[in-house]
Image (cartoon, rainbow, N blue to C red; front, top):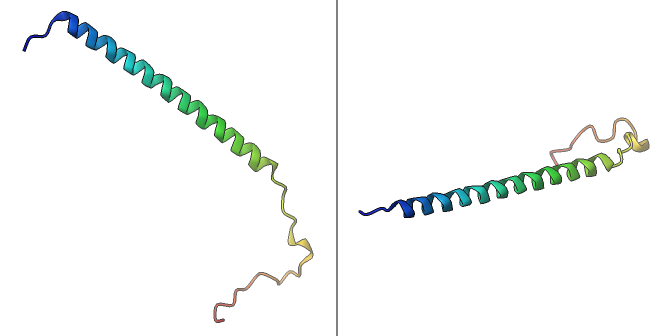
Length: 68
């Protein structure tokens, strides 16, 4: 097998370019995930708090009829 120094250098160069491209893609993915997480937290924080009991009797909703 004949491997010249030129082909080895070329292969190493292309491998380095591929690694750099992959690192950029991973970085952009992490930024997108962080942005989506921040947007989700903002949406959750903006939800109104549900009223407690809403004027219903205290015994309502405590039991489930499983024999019906």
